[in-house]
Image (spheres, helix red, strand yellow):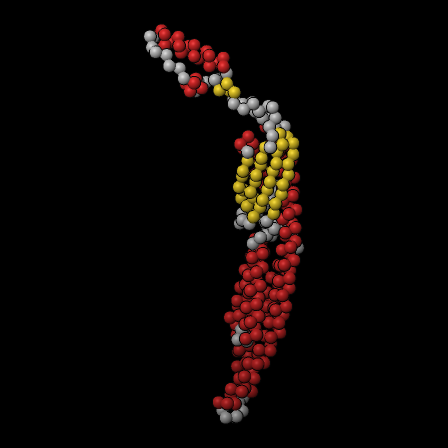
Length: 291
């Protein structure tokens, strides 16, 4: 089980110099990238994203790629003095022929084709892509290990809370049968008070109790709630991206717990329902961190 929070870093020597890659991930509903890449490698942005998609499926990934040193292949901006001289001589010749006052500025010369030379590429695209892909893969592996470690911590917390919920569900199930007996006794006591101690038809009393028991029955809700708990625990053991599925089960468990709370007239069950809902909300917060 992976958290969506993590960090990974890697660096290595490439044909364009020393490249460092840092990956930081935080929670996000989908897979999203925030890219910060040195200008010389900006054209490789989509290749980096494609490589990361092979390793992560959810989360906002902040990607930082820096080029610490350049090779001699990158000369920076260069100029053709010969081409500029040729342009100047031609412009002066035209001005002299047309009897114009020659005004040739450096800005004019720099704007003409061929004066400013394109810098030599840092490296062959295919070569640097493969080199960068290796470094990105190493950083992604470190990120995954970080997310797995955080995921193990979350798993322990979730298991602890689900264990509490299971205990409370068992107590609710036990209490539900007791509450029916309590209702029968309360009904008998009320009848005695209203009839000054006269006896009533026992069958009629049982009918009333049966109606109450049917209306207040939470057997189906408890069965479904236990099934959701079992499925949820199985998902926690999965190695796949399970965050969205677990969130679905939490919604279903909340639905069953709410139904139990609305049916019950027992104070103890109502208090247990509050406790379960509180723990489910804490589990939901943890699940939001899962990939």
